[in-house]
Image (cartoon, rainbow, N blue to C red; front, side, top):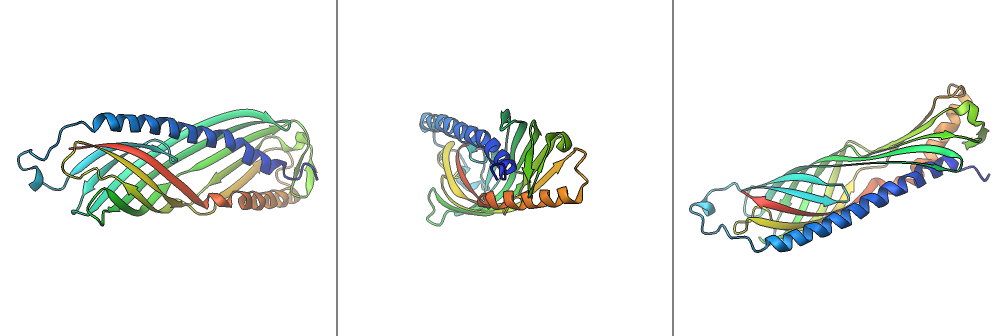
Length: 253
């Protein structure tokens, strides 16, 4: 029974370095963004530009960094309290290592395209945001065992397993709901700083496991793989609600 959850351990432990690296990068770069925002708060106002107040819609371009990775976005002012945002995020991280007599390679890829609507009910920087992301978040693992591995209810020698691979994906369209601070298209400032916190409802992950060894086509082995897939999905089901935290800076044209 000691090896019962070994495959699940690969999927979970191998993903930890990537997750930690993502969060560390977010903290470091977000700090830099905060410093830049403080520096740019001294920029000039546009309130005195001829015809500016009478020339909607207002358009701003910005950069963001957070738990969904770095990204770019455009904001368009629709009314005094409604703005539309479209943007993309992308982050990829690879990690190779050895654990429990298994040589493995992992890849974490966070990629998304967001279509959002901001409501500023108090006509200030506070906003309520809703929308959806085209979600291509994905985790991959490939391992070559050097010893026997327990999968499902049976133990298999490394020689018959070959290379074991696993993928974890989420549903393609994920609703988003959150709160934020900042209005990139508010007349009066060229540069603006923003902050967002919310939840991405990306659904329970879809886990797929495979092996390319001589045992791969065995009905008994396939049944064990299916059992492992269910167990892993139960372990990572918490990721169906993905926390979003992002800092950004934008320039108003």
